[in-house]
Length: 463
Ligand code: NAD
View 1 (tube, rainbow, N blue to C red):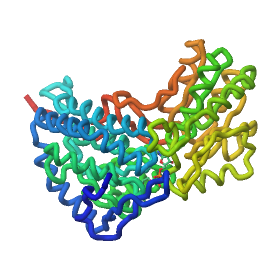
View 2 (view 1 turned 90 degrees about the vertical axis):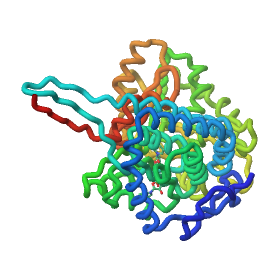
View 3 (view 1 turned 180 degrees about the vertical axis):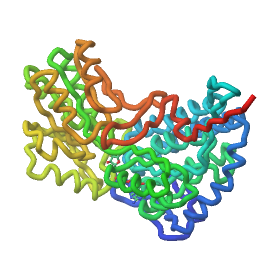
View 4 (view 1 turned 135 degrees about the horizontal axis):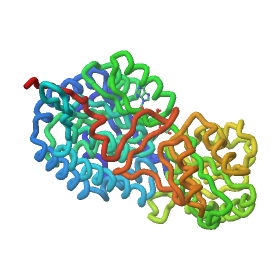
């Protein structure tokens, strides 16, 4: 398949060579936007805002549904781009393209439901309105390029905003294509603008340009803190979806075989490059040996293959830098067992399990963002909760137990935004998603997401 049709020709600055991480070979060249081009795009978006804001709610809904339908027609093409550009498995890549379609369809229901309130007051009538903000800047990381873009642009557009979107340098191809499909579906020009570029150039300009009224950032906690500090200068609205160090807590009364069989997929999916990865497994001491012995064949049995093979369950890391970073955590670590890799020139690290008993160790504390899981024993419910909460992060987590009272109690006690009991399920577009503590600020998805792209205005009318 050729990627020549992906158009960034309007950008004339430096180019970026996009690489297939499974082979290390270049697959496309993409022009990177300069600061001047970013400013021009923001100004064009700002000029397009009044007309988009004033599109009748039903018509905006129809356009978003049309966009969803066009994405649906291109699921295979988008998935193939992601298999090649991000090293995602076919199963994941198809799900991700479908997730864009589903987000658009779901938020197409919003324009006609942006309800305000009528609040009883003496001497008149009090009404509230949800007014769109204007230009919204969305900064996307490389680990889930399509869903994370859509989680921002679908509710933002539904609420009547215009969007400028910067994909990660490493993975711009699907975002560029989605920008083209938006136009094909009939979205007016400059309503959704995709701007491939460097974080410190394009992303930074979203933060500093006064016409951008909100920044949605997904990425590392370190950059997220800079974004938040930068947005503070203009009291700019900001949503942050950052890192994680989430726990999979397995009690002795759980179905240990099922929990052990599922655990690899809760951390090694997308080669562990998942902010929700359950990269800590906490097992009740009396079940620890059984769990670890059942985990081993599950990990060794994972099909780690070039994702162009439809049966691949885990692909490569995104880049040589990321591979070296992850490998750095493993050098000298006490590895219990690991799976395989296909070798070759791609950026491979096998799924790897380390067993620990010291919570001060780096592998227990830091987000590796690779296929590495640390397993530790706990003594009782209080110890499990204390160990799970002993982190600066708080994004997700799982609890396996047959005692549903305990499942709910522990889910309430773990300081994280997204918990699942007897499942490792992650994100649904119709339920809220976001982090506690240093995993983020604000929530995406769910029924309230469009409201996060509005100002609530109060109007009093005297009798
Ligand atoms: P990153 O922070 O390096 O980059 C994320 C995005 O920010 C990229 O588009 C990058 O170009 C841009 N960027 C970099 N420097 C910038 C700057 N100074 N100003 C503005 N933009 C800038 O993160 P990454 O390596 O791409 O992604 C990995 C991290 O993302 C992990 O820590 C992971 O946990 C996190 N993540 C979180 C979630 C979530 O929903 N919580 C989802 C995916 C990834």
